[in-house]
Amino acid sequence: MADLLKFSIPGKPEYVGVVRLAVSSVANRAGFDIEAIEDIKVAVAEACNNAILHGIHDNCCNYEVVFTLDEKKLTIEIDDNGRGYDTVNYQEPDLSNPKEGGLGIFIIKALMDEVQINSNTGKGTTITMTKYI
Image (cartoon, rainbow, N blue to C red):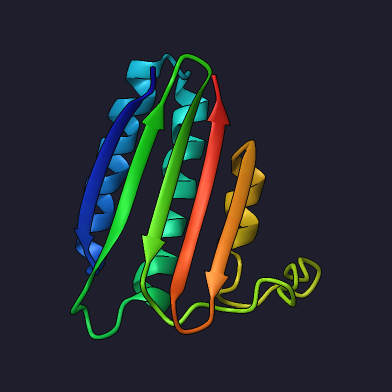
């Protein structure tokens, strides 16, 4: 049976560190090594920052973070109620011509074993990330 932890996080950048600490504790408890824990923390911070930048308006709302842990994997879901975006036409960044911003999803996909993004324009985005033990 999986363990489930749910958080409702204020849409303020100063709380991203709280989520990073929480996921670090959960990943440590699961038995991940320090390198994997650091990767998970970076991916989660990127997803939280995306929720704050694109899913929260005027710091007025919360976003949800759910950790699900079983004997094989840790799954983290970040869910906002923002404006969403077109995932079909999302383009990977051009790393030969880098620009500021736009690397969050690319970083998340590079660090986690599985990433799913569900987004509906006007209804928000859910990023589900999985790391196997």
